Image: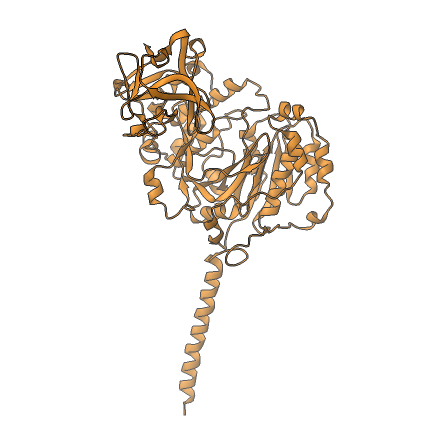
Amino acid sequence: MLTSWTKVKRLTRLSKIILYAIAAMILLLNYRLISYGGGEESDHELIFHHGSKSNQTFNAKQYILKSKGSQSQGYLKHRFNQFKSDIIGGYRHIPDSRNPLCKNRKYRYDLPSVSVVIIFHNEARSTLLRTIQSVLDRTPPHLLLEIVLVDDNSEDVSTGKELLALPKVKLVRNKKREGLIRSRVYGVNQSQGKAILFLDSHCEVNKRWAEPLLHEIVLNPKVIVSPVLDNIDLHTFDYQEGAEDVRGGFDWSLTFRWDYMTEDMVFKRVDSTSAIKTPTIAGGIYAISRKWFKDLGEYDMGQNIWGGENLELSFRAWMCGGEMKIIPCSRVGHVFRIEHPYTFPEGTSRTYYRNLRRVVEVWLDDYKFYFYQIRKLTETLEYGNIESRKQLRKKLHCQPFKWYLDTVYPELHVPNHDNATYGFFKQQHEMCLATATERTIVALIQLKPCSQISSAHKWAIVYEKLIRLYDFCLTLDHYRATKSQAVNLQSCRNDDPRQEWEYLKTGHLKHRISKMCLDGKIRPNSNNEETLVTALCSNSSSQLWQFVNL
């Protein structure tokens, strides 16, 4: 028979075990990784509801019809097919564009509350409403604290005011046009969330978009995270899956571009859902902790309207103790327009290059030389007082730009002027080699009248093998092919056989391995886009290039 003392000891031990178990459960509850809904996600979309306002009657059709116009009027005002957008309405189901592995991803329970900040100026009502509605429908209520709309002095005051009928929507209206950059700071100042998530006003967030971004912020409060951007076609408004193996970069003209991940980066990833460290972000859509946004210096309030703020933020984040990532399991659709629909008070180019000069003078150190080599005309452009931004750099003990190039973006080719010859490639009839499209991941090559080619558009023959424009190089699709191949511009890479050419005394541009020559005849590539191609070398005038030295 057990003595009373033995019973007491056993009860004591049992009590301790129970207490330890309870403590472990509390700890797990606070810090565990969970999947909303438990286990693997359902294939059916869960629509969230946010408080009493969601039960009020908001007539989306009536709201949209107040700005309805013809198809031509929509293109003229918004530079996209507003007519098609209006037909879609205020809500639609979009395909889940995530990698299937994302459905099994688990995220922390203790995610911070988030304020979604959206800036708009004369935005089409249908795209603005769908942006907001997609956030409400696809963000868990306990995470979404508010949606802060900043109306940057739109012509129609009611566009924003009528949206106050929707749940969790707050509105700030600028008394004068301030632009995207300053408006974002105003929006953050009116928000209360522990995390800030910026969206453009013509987006549609996808399923479970917020949790992966907020999860990364909990793991590292000094990270800036961007979703993978899907494309919403500006003509048809079809929702199209975006590439998830790219990251943000730039060239020495400080033009943002998308770069493919290197083979080494792909090899080091755990799987295709792993976060991608990115040297820059596109700028419009990202998440950041409120504290880090404030500590990092918000935005440069001396920049005007739009342009260069994404690079300035990217340099500052990396060089001053943070990092940037693209999160593949977070997807947001965005309408990518070819041109801006709104005006810049000082002109588009002047505003853009003024902003870039502020970035260059504060952050690029001696490397600003390469920017001014390309953008010579900007050297005399006034850019305002930058002393406060220089002081911020000192206060944050930021790294030099060389550190950024060596550590964050070693893939960016730094021009070596000792081994380069600069000039134009010219054919008969005064036609010159030039780019046909914007420099993104891949740019097409075409011929243009030499009179239309600026002095900034000069080619370089480097080490007698690379044919370079800025830090893009002439690239063959398949270097081992023995038939005609499309030629384009891609980021210069060391020892890439697709980029090795010879400029012969005969005037031929000959690819070293395929032994094919660049031909001046325009032909469609595999995507039916017109570009130059290679052909069997001949004495045809279309293969003879005169290199005019500068």
